Length: 168
Image 1 (cartoon, helix red, strand yellow):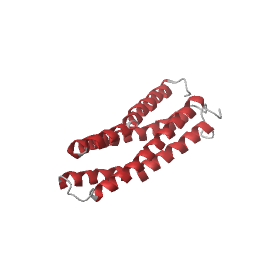
Image 2 (image 1 turned 180 degrees about the vertical axis):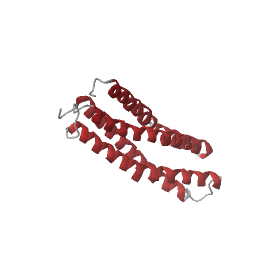
Image 3 (image 1 turned 90 degrees about the vertical axis):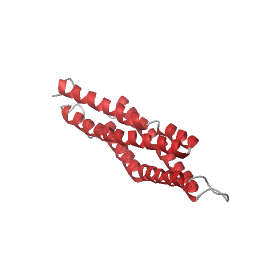
Image 4 (image 1 turned 120 degrees about the vertical axis):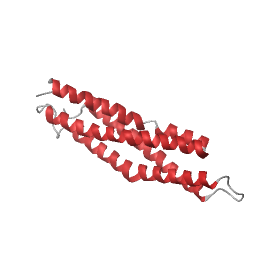
């Protein structure tokens, strides 16, 4: 087929479109987190839940980016090879990103939502310091922030590899 075929170009469009939708859905998650924290209570929980839903849908498109990328290499008629640094480097960074997402980010976000729900259900805080959920929320929020920033850096590195194609 080769990189000039209609099939290749169709899969390239699907690859790019999946990247726009998937990574676009999660790239600015920190802003939603800041807004949820600023509003607290039911409003903050609603922002967090809406962001989690959009991010969960975006994940499927992020998975599709990988599938379409592999198909592009296979359809390129040897123009692109898995041995080329830009391809295996992108695959490696992608796998690291998926690992961080599933191993660190998502468990912390799920727990944060549960903690926020507990705080909303508990009503106004009693005197004597913050509830234990608040302390755990702040710690998990820091982990989510660092992990989210790391994922954004990985995405930029992958994009740089794909545009400059070192090793071709």
